[in-house]
Length: 190
Image (cartoon, rainbow, N blue to C red):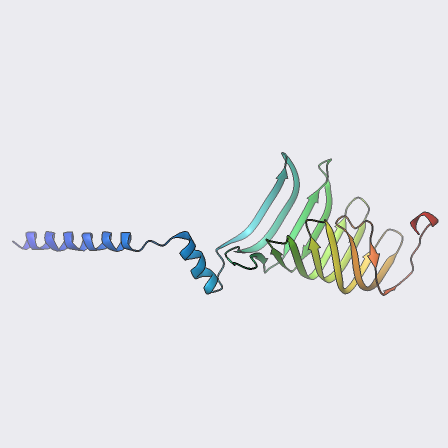
């Protein structure tokens, strides 16, 4: 009799547990909305290494110690790299073209504009040019960098300091504002 009572209790407990598991289903939208309301990321990763390919060719490599995916935001979805980021773009020959690094980054999904902050360094490997600043905006659609912060731009011929800098993604065709330093130019550069 005692065995039968124990068996009935176990059966009732099992039925209750199964009912609980099947009654607690949330749609993906409900989970995303809950996370957005609580300002929590929909995903996260540690020590990421992402390779981006276009038509089978590697175009960039991204490394970051921590990644948060806030794509669940309705108005301004974004990705956050709170402990820094390093991006290496690859040219058509397969060699490293440009390296971009900083202590913190945000990438807005709708606009493809990134903000990189803290010890931002951009290095063009082939031209041996380097841009250093504390804050940089990167328009990935237009392949364009800009900052209104202080900067140091180093070329093999000169070092330029100033406030405000714009250039193409490979640090070519640049425009420096409010500058100091010696600049060597040729007639064709003017």
